[in-house]
Length: 155
Image 1: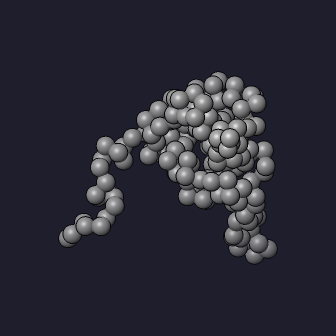
Image 2: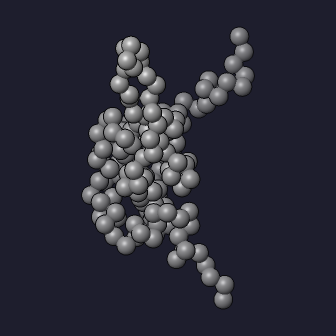
Image 3: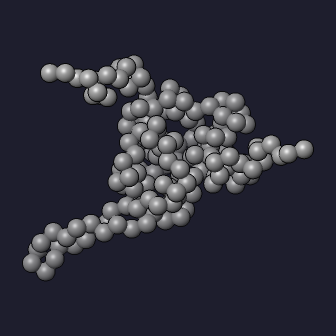
């Protein structure tokens, strides 16, 4: 049986096993850095979206984050029939955390020249993130792909 074209079998194992490609990287960011426990709205929404690791998270743009929804279970019907989950929009304060994480990644690379990578994404210091989140840099970096202050202005 040929495995040509099968991206799973053809991928370099050392790349696949880098921390940022593993589900544990997203768990670390959500639970340790941001402080949301397993089963939280953020976990549910990102799982529904298909975001499984750091690499998936950095691939999300503002529209992806703003469109996130999470499933809410409904009680059984009158005859005891299971009901489908209802999808609800993720509350804005939780979306702000995700925008903040993206801004933090950008800030680390462009301002501090210390990029978050596939290797060090599981070493983000929660105190560093909280300090960033409470700073004016958070406001500047949270919702723009290229912060306007970094775009060179014509002379």
